[in-house]
Length: 221
Image (tube, rainbow, N blue to C red):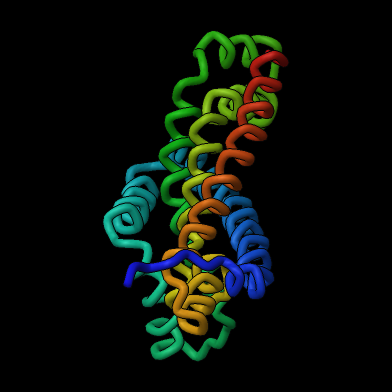
């Protein structure tokens, strides 16, 4: 007897998916916000500090970029509390991990953006008497933001999808909600079809919104 699709049980528990989707977005937004701060600070240090600081930052970036996210999640949630007297919830642990993860990628994004600022703009700022800090705030950072905005948008979309990894430590995001419904209804195909559609639709909505922001910044140049 063939498999017959039946979405009734999925709709009955749709609140699990909807609540999980909202939590996934919240995790992604918080993580990208913290990641931007980490990436920007380290990128500024990298382009202005000495060899030792640059080596430390490069080591952090290489470590994060070459270790699977799921392993980092396990290390922070299960490993860190065993060696340090610290306690935190699963969502907090995941946000910390995803923030460090995104920060490592954004270091390279912002570093390349800072180095891509035309030398003429910096010389003009120096000519009118701007201090190095003023040139950074008023010249380099605004120009860098416009340069790196597409990469920043792509990073946010990637982080939204990466929130699915939080299910391995029982954070009730979208994928965890889908697993819960699957375990309790055994409607494997239906629940993952609906979950896939939710990821796709949300991703396209986010992409459309981010592209509008990018066009707005390009028009303001």
